[in-house]
Length: 316
Ligand SMILES: [Mn+2]
Image (cartoon, rainbow, N blue to C red; front, side, top):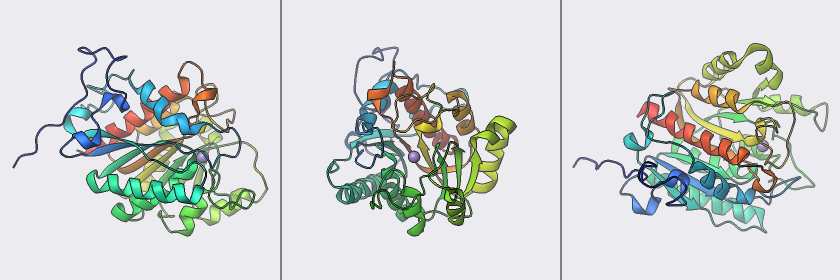
């Protein structure tokens, strides 16, 4: 039996974009669709933050900002993503705000359930702690992924105040659990001072390559895109995007801002350069709306999440 066409969001030319469903891009909910190609999952967890808290309110802020997007046709990809793919909002993970380990289990289980229905998952954080359970869930269906991590910070520290699971440590835990292919993984956008002279060395021991922000400044977007594409190849790709990779002028609403970062145009253009790669999972994390102004940060995050859907649509 032929698959029915996707259930699309109501067009913004029929119902104004400020009205209608409160889901991501006003999409249908996962429970209301007969099948799903890409699921959007909110992960409102921020008990792993080391400085400003508040990313628990990220998913709803990103959904609210996503109303503004015109989603019928994307000229940069030549796609009609919600017409060629069934995309649906899977709601939020109910995670314990007082117990990090329990929350991690809940996130892993919820992401696993969604991945039983949808082959690709785009998660909205939440702080960066959530990357560990998300990578575990993606790993079970896609194997060891190529991990491309956009962030001002390495996020490969060992512990904070004795805690192993925090928003500064997810990729050390993920490396210990062998969740990504260390020969195909990299950080992009790293900058700023570090806790210790050894931080970069310890990070390199995990196999990561680093595109420092200065390299982007000196060599440009196309060069960075080439480096990523050469490293990832045809492997299943997981993109983890900490919104603080953007300069605070482009993303003030975040927990640990770091000046001299990417512009939103640079980030969007790098993502667009990844067309054709085999994206299986993504997260956009660290949007903390209490520090945002005029939805600058949440609109950037919503747009990036939509770009991710278009990357999947390119291969459909
Ligand atoms: Mn991070």
